[in-house]
Length: 233
Image 1 (cartoon, rainbow, N blue to C red):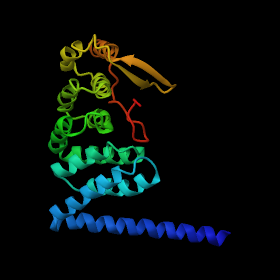
Image 2 (image 1 turned 90 degrees about the vertical axis):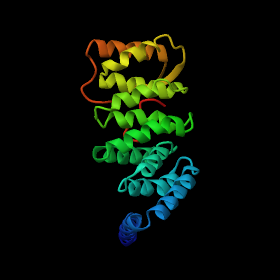
Image 3 (image 1 turned 30 degrees about the vertical axis):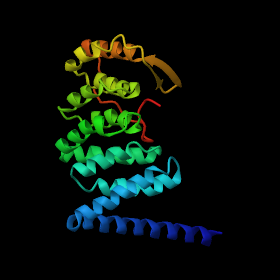
């Protein structure tokens, strides 16, 4: 029995080494054949997103997200945002972390991709509900402006995510926009850590205004669920 276990561990280690080797080759290939490499990665993302949630989706997309995190450019940022729309939490987490790492070195590229996403990504995509939490953690001065742009989105969950992120950042410039939502009757499901609750956009906006006006916003930006999701389901 012990020998079988040791054999499995050895195979696992070799498999991990092979994954790393292939990733390094693709990253290196992007420097000499960027267009072809990005086209292939884009196809892999589209195919992987069709796998839904589960081990197959994670196995196909997590390594791709890690590769993209080592590259740069508008196309890369767009693909990582697309991966935030995955049904698999591990994929969303990996893509979000890669976007944040990119933002620390190339904030403008990530910021522009986040602004493009509002028009480019399907309105019901999980990516748009994840993105406010992802960018809020970056802590750059330009983040609140991006988030304020999400307040006018047609999807209530996207709006709610932006409200929470702005409230946590304590952005005074958001108050006039939040006041416009103070009577918005649309409802969203929230996970407060103890179970699901329901709230309206209007109530969330009013609470956010109070937090900002009273200066009671938390010192740290909102933290995403370690499994890759935001506070909302």
